[in-house]
Length: 104
Image (cartoon, rainbow, N blue to C red):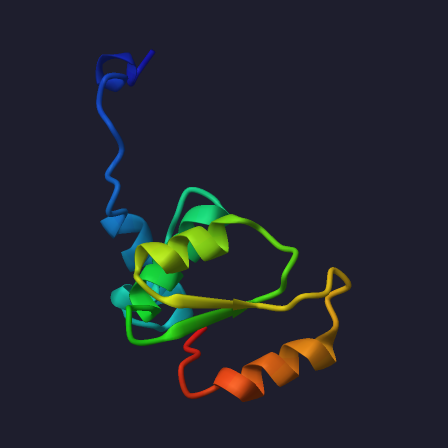
């Protein structure tokens, strides 16, 4: 009841207070903190921060579909492993073949 008259207001999406409090607690800069509505949004922020049309993204062939979608939104090339077993050696080989381009 105390805040019923504020129910129509949206929360601060920049989360300045929360970032400031976390930055003080963990002794980091505010700009080093990413807050999102779930892991999907945080992953989107990270991909958009690191990728562009001049670099690439490496992912397992079978994984969350949004990784590739976000990378393509940035114009980045996406390299995927062929297997569905999450073969680390296959991942390493693909990385070695394209490491000059890969940023994530």
